[in-house]
Amino acid sequence: MDLELLETTLRDAGEPAYRARQVWEWTARGAAGYDVMTNLPRGLRERLALEVPFSTLTVQSEARSRDGTVKTLFHAGDGRAVEAVLMRYRDGRRSVCLSSQSGCPLTCTFCATGTMRFGRNLTTSEVLDQALHFRRLEAIDHVVFMGMGEPMMNLDAVLAACRRLPATGVTHRRTAISTVGWIPGIERLTGAGMPLRLALSLHAADDALRTQLMPVNERYPLADVLAACRAYFEVTRRTVFIEYVMLAGVNDRHEQALALVDVLDPRAFKVNLIPYNPTGAFDGSGRGAIDAFRAVLEEHGLRATVRLTRGADIAAACGQLAAAQPPPVPVPPEAAPVKRERSASTLAT
Ligand code: SAH
Image (tube, rainbow, N blue to C red; front, side, top):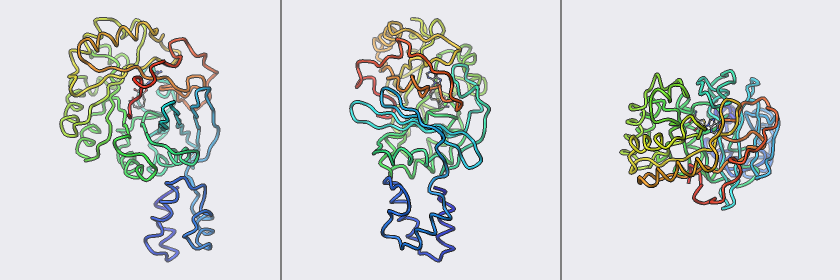
């Protein structure tokens, strides 16, 4: 729902200021439309239905995975593609993965979104409407900004959406913002005074390899990015999660685990190893290599979990959001659900 349009429409209708709050409260709790908002006069409900579309996004298609994951492709008012994913875990968590941009201007080599043309930043309402869509299906309790786009490049809209999320059931502590290491954004988040989870997509502990995988590293080199994340921890006392996608023969060697140990202070950082979801560019590390890598980190006192892959059969997993429906991706053995569901719990716990 375009919340600005809602406010101006209510003002033009001569309605008291609390009306916007009433509409928002209903919407945040998963109301299906204006007609159920029984504390609003009927005439006003009818007027709103005509003048303020209930969502800024329209559903184009929805795919359901064997594991319960739902991926939805929306179109914004101007036709831009936006994808979001609902992940359902056996322990009852319901986590929504949101997009902050249509497409992505960055060109990380392992990520499908990077191959799509960049569209634009999403508005606050477009970000919120993704979450609200799933809220209408069921209660949600976690949000991760790990869909399309770089949230730190659209931080005003992302933070404005975060401020509204608690009303939908998602507290700041259960909201994670994932970044490539966009330092100005990390610094602003540090000063925002919200106890959000910060996640850094690291993927390599040395500048040369990281630049190869993520060209943005040239602009914001590793040491500076880690210093900014460290400052986030010092100010918020919230552990920063390090995302590390496991690429066979590229970043999964023993000495590369040791290099990670060298650059990460275990008091400030925790590592989340991500099985690579096929996008064509790399081979993912096998289960054995991932477990061995994890063991090295833990032996050196660095906490590490392996992310549970969700929705790979519908190309809804990390890095697979690219709007156009790609051909079905076979689920490789290393992407099969991990047994330790609890310890493999993802970012926002
Ligand atoms: N731009 C932000 C958020 C979007 S990506 C960021 O990069 O952090 C969310 C996570 O998915 C990132 O950690 C990203 O590196 C990871 N990812 C991208 N492509 C992937 C792939 N093919 N397999 C597994 N994870 C991937």
